[in-house]
Length: 501
Image (tube, rainbow, N blue to C red; front, top):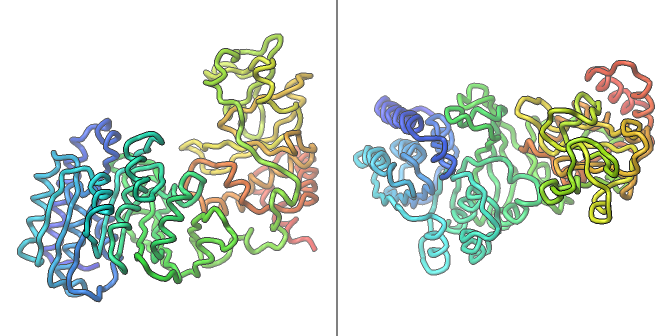
């Protein structure tokens, strides 16, 4: 978007203020408020997503306005010809009153350039929005927001307030977006930068359904780097920018991508909605394709089976260690069984017992604990969380019963997902083949298309498609015959299996 020289100078001044405020704000305060101010280039891109309006009056909502970076990017566009409103009325919510002087200074710059009136609201946005939804008559035509990111406890006052308006969600950012949508007039436009985490997983399903019932998704922008959107604040969170149109019929969705917030390599494609949310997906996961070409897995007719089809189950590790603390043991001893954590798995090898991991290696087997264990056998396990340093989202390993001697049972800690067969082990070749499949580059790329988490939930794994049981078994037989197995070798073998007639 091209701005006048004066406009560029004003936005530059606001950006310098943002950098100074961010530098002077402690990490504890940022975390407490979930406050990460929007960089200018992102604010300008977000403002560019609003379509040319068919109304002459704009009622703009900025929930979590900070120092006004988003509002000012919008107002800068209003000062041009394509968003030439006769009147702009802005409501800027900001609960951190120490930012109000900066916010006032930013907005006041536009009083002579835009037919603007504005109100800086110091109150709690959630409480005020709930009151407006229940008792007020305010509606907005536009909303631009970078909402706070912070979990909401299930028994908190916020959850109680949100439920009064039919909103069930687990984080402030999704609450802010849902409330903004509720405050919009029909045809209203919402542009927000938010974590990608809402796109899948069971916890955000009510929020996804809330949005899909009330809005049409028009545009999603994905940053290819997880740390670029708020790099000044060292935020490692995959963020997207989304534009929603309230009360509109869903149609095709524009997906754009860029490596970072310079948008230098911006790429844009349109997709039918059934490529974004699969018609038969009851979880309503939101997929974000990064190429108009189908992925290798989507192209293959041989990867079409559910876990149920191939007779495999996947579950989250049932041992929650802090609830069973009295039974934990640092090292194995008489009457204990192995307790497996992610730290016991490295490069598809098991190191157990492992010294110096600050986790117990064993747990007592007795009448109180045995219900949490699985019979010793072959399993495939996937870490629920990948580390910041790892390039892969899905990291799978084989559990080999010979590593544990003649123990009858195994404990799997809650940070592991495990594949099993009706709570029993898998066949040796099937366990290896499933592990190999999950460790292919094709699976990792496919998983990234619909998951913005470093977290891998059992639900995510259930919804994936798999090769047949026989194909997995053949892959396992081959893998066990190899003395050295590189990523390239694995990928080549997997591709060869798929191309066999």
